[in-house]
Length: 204
Image 1 (tube, rainbow, N blue to C red):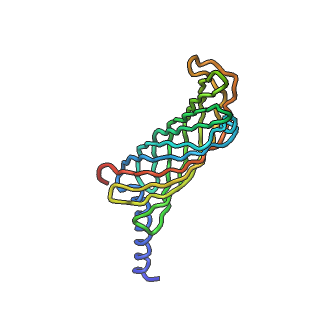
Image 2: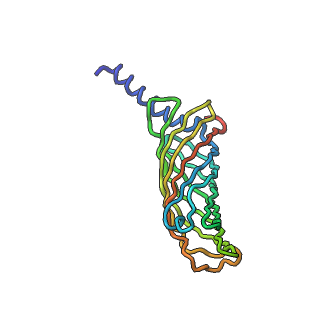
Image 3: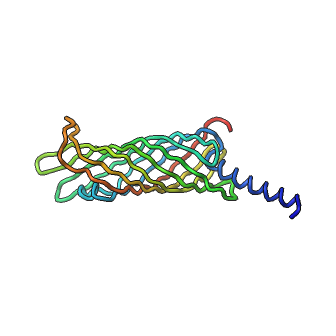
């Protein structure tokens, strides 16, 4: 193989890697806002008959290379109705999301793999005949997923992704007093689909 061909091959590889990195964001810092569709499964949620809910998340990202990391806040709201009684739950939390942009020969689209570590709190209104129990529970959730970022301009990208996380909430406590309710909040899986915009800040 000639020196020219080797140099051309090396240049093409470098451009492909650079494209994948910059397609996440051309800027070193970025912010992202996304809408969430979250489906809850497992004994933590089946007992309450609480399933799919809507919400959103906001995160700030640092994008030094193909590897990037984000930190932010998430919120989803869920409800269920059975035999005339309604259970309501709000799930909130802070999270860390590392990403790896998969290098492909595109300057517009960058697929990625992502991890997820979140510290979650659920606030739940459990209805019984004639009364409502206001309880809460905390959990550490972890998991991963993937998606892609499609560049819309030099500083704006469209992000579409999916994630699966696992969490164990332990025991419910009453929200007003903090006393143990004696009810098991259980464990579960959360399937999430998200779509949003990633906005780069400053110059790279």
